[in-house]
Image (cartoon, rainbow, N blue to C red):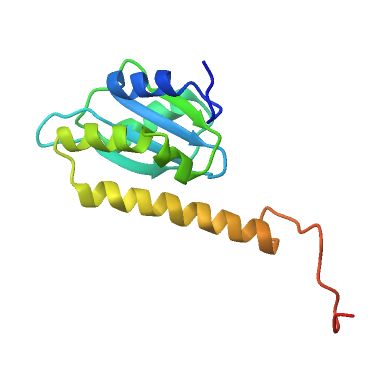
Length: 148
């Protein structure tokens, strides 16, 4: 069932509970959020922003390069997020990811740093959209001269 966020929130929360590796595809941001909940001491779970890839095979190879001591997971679960980062937090998704990572021994500072990177990235995209930055074109431009 799709809710006010444009996604099936209940299903996403269930995915977070059962995923060993998760990718969140933000509509507004180029990087993806990678969350690997797997642990095998000394390897702890990881959360980071990663580049887009062209295929599932490429994502598995990238994951192997990030975590060479870990076996590849059977699958990598993924979902799109069509809204702002703030809505991602308000929906409870971020809290669910954070709680699971903390329960597995992740450091709160590492999680908070990624959260800040998400906000910073979204802010940069918003500014670029307003100012006609890279990848954007302004619809209205200020005339060269005094306003009439």
